[in-house]
Length: 311
Ligand code: EPU
Image (cartoon, rainbow, N blue to C red):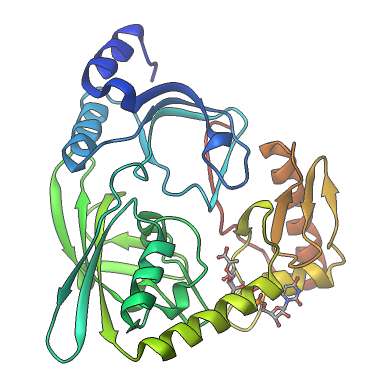
């Protein structure tokens, strides 16, 4: 797939200032690494999102949705085709009261998970506690079935609004979604684009909810590095009882470096960009981790961070 001058002209006519070319992905990822995205579109609304997806399909150009860029490692060569950034406008949150003290909250894909958490804390809604402190967007959280030991997106999701790859809107019920540990798939649609997600929460005591939130966030602050360039936990936990961080620490890898990439001294499942790391340095360090953990524990660590872009 080649992006021609003709393509660029057409896109500028359609999207004006919402389309950028050769946009450095390092500006849009929490790792602060990644080469250019050929075409970077920030749709203003659902209709523009649909136009983007249809245009990509008609022109046989690949289309990738970035989310918050917080669980992402973009290669140094960058991303070919279209990258969609939903965080600029697709971020509304709506609430609908149900019976028996339950509420349905619908969040657009570009809404921050933290905004949804803040919203539920403010109104005293429970069931969202597991997500306190999880970075990124709702779209990203759903597509990675984000969660912690105390719960995950699959536990509260009721339905999704998606766009198919040919650009048609569709509503998907929970029963037609297959969730597993940090991943999701639809039974009938491959690789959909998430437009919005609806969750069922319950009304509770706001003081209790706030207290719980503060406890969880305090624990995270204590155990995880803050204010650094990283993508959170780099590897999946091999199972419920085994923490990848612990295995990496026991392999003697805290503080290990490759160029400007480093294994955090605070939590060994965090790879940190100390400022000038490249994606290849991060991948080199991840490979060292995989090899050492495999040698010591005979466990194959799988990446939790999504790696995208041209190799
Ligand atoms: N541990 C170590 N050394 C380390 C890190 C952890 O010995 O360097 C030990 C801890 O002492 C603890 C156990 O491993 O006994 C589990 O550690 P922790 O509570 O930090 O949880 P985790 O399994 O490492 C998971 C999620 C985190 C989430 C925390 C908080 C995964 C891969 N990680 O970490 O998610 O914040 O629970 O509940 O599921 C993320 O998704 O990016 C992420 C950081």
